[in-house]
Amino acid sequence: MRCTVAAAGLAAVLAFGVAGCGDGASDAPATGSSPGAATGTVKVFAAASLTESFTTLGKQFESAHPGTTVTFNFAGSSALATQINQGAPADVFASAAPTNMAAVTSAVSPTTFVKNQLVIATAKGNPKKIIGLAGLAEPGLKVALCAPQVPCGAAAGTAVEAAGVKLTPVTLEQDVKAALAKVKLGEVDAALVYRTDATASSADVDAVEFLESAKAINEYPIAVLTGAANPTGAQQFVDYVLSPAGIKVLTAAGFQAP
Amino acid sequence: MTKQRVPPALLVPAVGGLIFLILPLAGLLWRTPWSTLRQRLTEPEVAQALKLSLLTASLATLLCLLLGVPLAWLLARVTFPGRRLVRALITVPLVLPPVVGGIALLLALGRRGLLGGWLAETFGISLPFTTAGVVVAEAFVALPFLVISVEGALRGADTRYEEAAATLGASRWVTFTHVTLPLVAPGIAAGGVLCWARALGEFGATITFAGNYPGITQTMPLAVYQSMESGDLDGAVVLSLILLAVSVTILAALRDRWLAAP
Image (cartoon, rainbow over all chains, first blue to last red):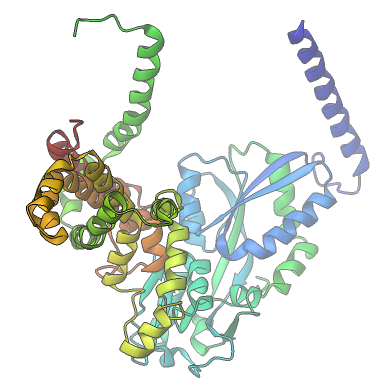
């Protein structure tokens, strides 16, 4: 008896859900290019440096597409690539570097959507008077870099090489947020982080621009993944990120348009 | 004891539990790149991380023995107000997520920390990003294991020997060193082994408090994480395998001698 009731309930929910889909499709005829309105959950794996801007974009996307939910997994791009290749359920991958995107075998024709540049993050007011990359090599100064295996670390390596300085960091952090946290805590005097991360934490840190960062610009590719559980939603989320509204959020966070 | 029939209601979940614990380890062995194993083992980064892990875990255990045995004795043999609270506080690192432990250590012993600021200004001592910092992080997480084991041993030990020593005129210190310590030596050894194994596997507090730099603070668990993060699954598996082999060897060798129930 109880089973029958449950089954009836389930059927009702399903019917309601299907009806909901239909309504959604008829509500949004303006998006002519899309094959149907997105529904359900879109699982986005995104680089740690995209945390703030993608969280905002996710909320905007959800209100523009009622009935959809965007969930995020933010981490270092290389870790995300490994997770996706090991079968983690993802619909969209946004990487902080093309190399990590290339490592993902299921990414479909990635598009570069933004660029990011490095800055030197220091404590508020720049108490150590750091003005450039060469200044980071001063003895007694504690510097955090990202590990060379993650994009912010690779970019830092390129910039340091371009500057021709010998830098000895005290720690190699696993993603840009961890490096920035060490500055916020006051445990290091400076860290090389993305401009966007420094912007997002401008209440706690100062950003010092440096010349050589122009030689180490990171390109961010985004792609829908084959085998995505929600390909329609995934494609619409990518479209939204690439739309003028999406780029506006990203440039406000300090990213450069490609 | 006579031979008994094992009820299936107990046997099935028991075997299930065993498989649940062993299967992931089997997965590790299954995925190990055996053909390149030798070559990977001789990589200097691996040797460096392993050496650092063994060194810091041993130093952390030493530190825990120096601090933990007296602490356990205090808890087991002396009645003082607030003892229950002290015991609860000691076990906090057992249940605290290690990352939280790392942040707590930073706020206490970091450059701007409660005590760390004073240490840095007065003596120029700074623990984060140093090998000593790794030892501190490991000891923080491992100390409760030692204290609990030793306290248990002390409570289980027959106090009549200590009382006899006292009636013969031995001071508390002499009683402790000549009677109590030999009596609970197996318990201390068991606690030390547990403490060492926990220190060897420590990850969260270490990466948060001591950072990650090859040769200075990058222990084996950190090296595993870094390999995994950078997409080098083979490297991560090899490093994990070494860590597993070391842990299992030590635990298996010592279990029957010291960890077995009396």
